[in-house]
Length: 74
Image (tube, helix red, strand yellow):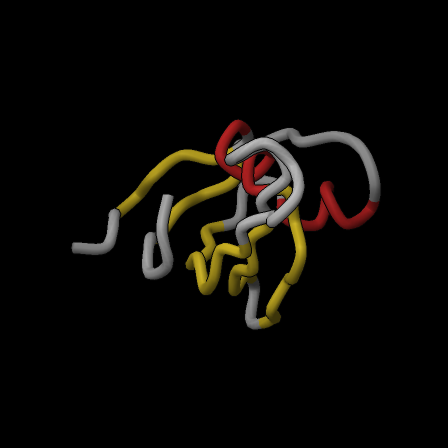
């Protein structure tokens, strides 16, 4: 997953209102923030554009596990 990728969240996500709001929605990855202290890749964060709004600081691992690629950036 990298900036520019077009992805879609899986349908039926449960949890917080924030999680349920993105369920089934397509989104574009804007940025990935590496965590400088945690083991590599374990606590990285991502920002994305979904439904006309920017969501910031989501767990990169969670987003990867709960979405699928629609079109990956070149």
